[in-house]
Picture (cartoon, rainbow, N blue to C red):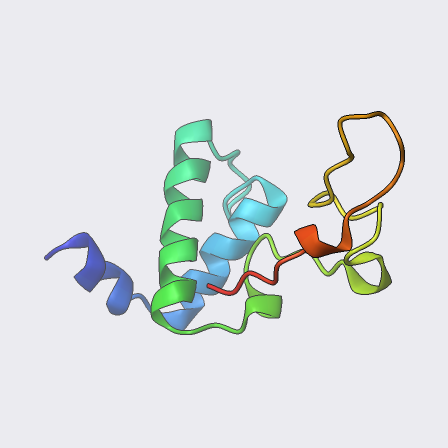
Length: 97
């Protein structure tokens, strides 16, 4: 069985359990996730969400920028090199996966 087949057949309950374990940093039985376990689980979750077309706002790591999107509070905004606080409105591009 390939990795893709494994993720494709992953039970939704297992997906939710992996996601909760990542969020809490521990397995359901209370044992702490190692860094390697966290990385592998996160990779599986991201792959599962892409494969099963989970809505973007429900995906792990989604940040709702709300009213701050496109403002200087948005981390995607680059400041000009001259040191002024002017923000170029043409630098914003909506990215969709």
